[in-house]
Length: 139
Image 1 (cartoon, helix red, strand yellow):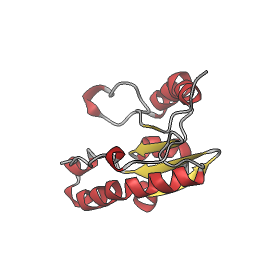
Image 2 (tube, helix red, strand yellow; image 1 turned 120 degrees about the vertical axis):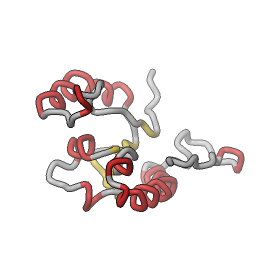
Image 3 (cartoon, helix red, strand yellow; image 1 turned 45 degrees about the horizontal axis):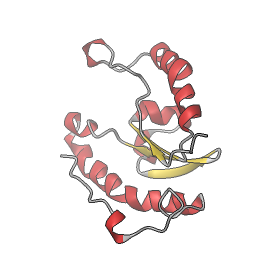
């Protein structure tokens, strides 16, 4: 059988639209209904980290990313963490501190989610010191 994935990060649209423009609503619908929902069903992640407003909008329809970035909410039987996309800092340097702060909080949010799911480190085993990864710089 398939084991439920702990954390999963993917894209809403599977290819960037021409000219690097924002995806159109019909492009998002096509990708989510034909691919993403099927992937989520197969992977069955316990925790989903959304990167950017388009993926966030799939789980939090009326929310604004400026209001809920860096926050975690329970959606059904999984946790969803809304994050700015790291590339946002390339377009709006004023977002860089918030993005860095949100990513710095991510390990603690994952720990809280795993605790809420009854897991220790995502695979049911007690976490060992050497299992602690080092956070790489985003910039």
